[in-house]
Image (cartoon, rainbow, N blue to C red; front, side, top):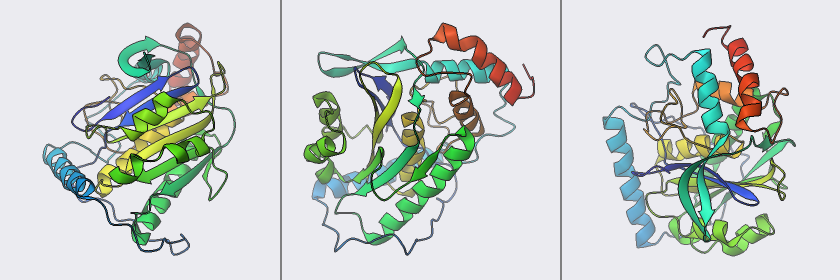
Length: 316
């Protein structure tokens, strides 16, 4: 997990994986997202508590601080961040086939561990859920941002990914501090059988956790069937958008973080806020049909190297 805000990798439990994200941005103004008039609005938003208001002020300061340091870029990488086929292959293996966390005594413990390749074998249906505190204009901006991002992910991965208004299998929750701390009942309705560790982790997120995602599979099957991402409502626009980008992408199977990955949002250095060119290529590799869910590092490595060489025109 990242600390300062944090973006966490993903963790595979008996039946799920977790990833959390601290939000990224770039130097420069935050993108303006138009309002979609078709998004249903809520009644009068519930007033946030003093704790929630204080968190909003804190994350606004964090965003300003990171931007002033030249971090949280939104350019996707450029001449200053070159990478070759072998770099792409190595970064993919570390991010898609290693876990950042293990469970121990019902708690999540940071520990890099070789795992198996995990991804969705069924279409991904992203459904956004808002707490009562979210006003209609913000709901519209968030909904439009997620819909546009789903289109980008679908193009990058060649996997069916869309947004839906009901019957989703990947739930994106936008909640403030007050709502999230009392969301256990709703979590159990969204994912019947969700474990106590996942519920407790979501309800007790510390301030240093900007956002997180859990992806679930059935038993020992490595194919994901459900996911839940949690986005803090207190975030300013770019931190908020950054959380959407990383948590949804991690919930697709790019579960870990690596300090070697650049340009990438799967890196705890906060340099990039939004999905980069290399991240898109890693999604393309992840959903290539030459790979299969459940592969080990040893099984996947030679195939990944071939695919990476093809994507970068044989550059080594």
